[in-house]
Image (cartoon, rainbow, N blue to C red; front, side, top):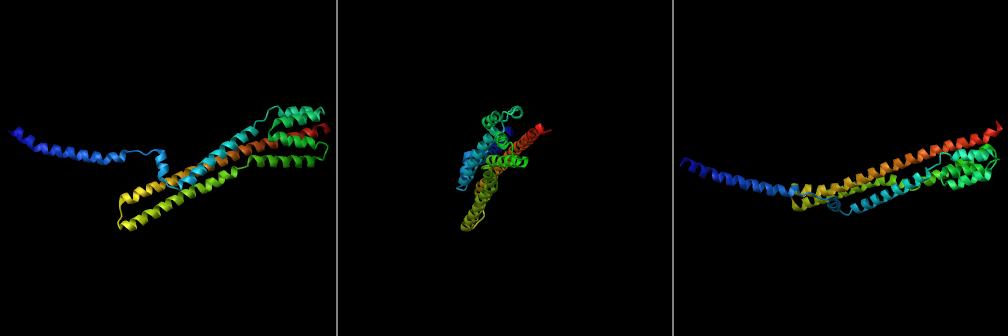
Length: 238
């Protein structure tokens, strides 16, 4: 009798606990659903279109400039030694031919100096310096685009967020109440634009300075080659 009475008392309690557990599980289940990256991008709204265009443009400029700079940086270790041997032998045409076939900024700069052999040393140095600046300018072409993207991409993100917040408060004014779902649901979607803008901006910022570091490294090599060439011209007169 006692056991039967206990079972009758605990049975409703167990049923209630099971129902509560089921209700909690059903409530939590939607929260556990995850969103793909594409879904998040779509929820950012129309402002994601210019941010996406800027991201594609920054990737293109970075890859294109990197390939160009790396190609220009491939300088044969024996290049200056070969030029030196031909010049000291008086074989100017062969020295010019080596520079033309080099296809890098150092070769073009040294070729300009070879053409000016016989002129005053200041004129030779000036012509080589001018060619060096032109070649560096070619390498820096379009790198400024990355700097611009680094500045405006986060701004687009903030514009999207501010626009979203304005819409949220407008909906609150129409509903005449404050709901957590109304605020958080719209706000997290608009924060996506800020995150996307910052990611694109950081990528462009890092890419811009990285490319400039590569250009500076090549510019240093050009300066060393220029000094070696000037010293080479002065050797016979010693």
